Image (tube, rainbow, N blue to C red; front, side, top):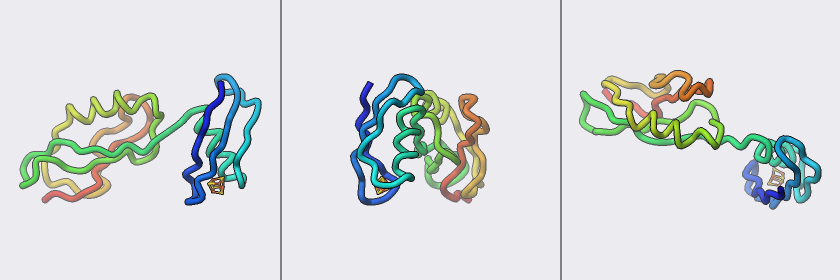
Length: 118
Ligand code: SF4
């Protein structure tokens, strides 16, 4: 398998090509620095993303509050995590950084509030 990856570590945005199967990388080209090489290797083997979304909230003016994953989540779990967040209703007050869902979808990652609601 060949995967084309745009490095997002810095604004240069190098195009990196990674070849391999599963977790075995056989060739990697296009990186300009080792940070980019590491990024591309991780993207090939187990891509992750910070998840940002909104959750329902009661007891305050707005019906929604911004939420995010505290750390990046496996890309293949994002849809399941979105479903869990969709089922969530939190009660004000909520403060930035409050954990709203612990260990979402058994990923070891918490979903936290990224806003305040009194
Ligand atoms: S490979 Fe290095 S120089 Fe290129 S975008 Fe990534 S971090 Fe920036």
